Image 1 (cartoon, one colour):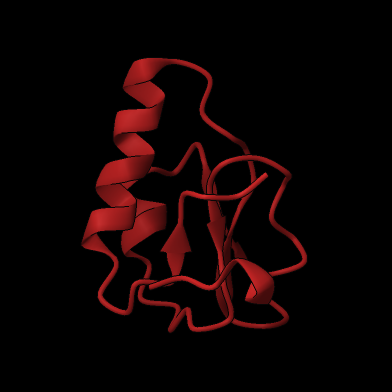
Image 2 (cartoon, rainbow, N blue to C red):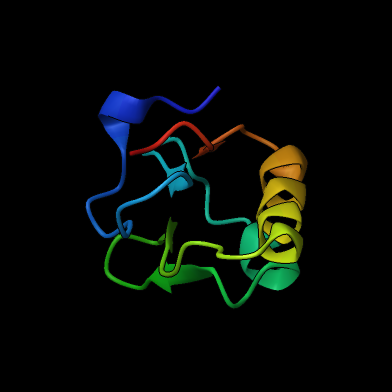
Length: 77
């Protein structure tokens, strides 16, 4: 489960976030490329844009549920 206190600093503020347990598998960036990006310096993903519609939330939730290490959280602020 993603840790809110261990968020990647590049995450934009909002509900979804990626924490430091990301293994750079690319799944979130493939399934929700409008919302997740890669930090090339650190080799991890981060949330570049928060969803605004129900469909966008569903897309981000799908990425969260598919994350093999549970590095994506949905309890951000």
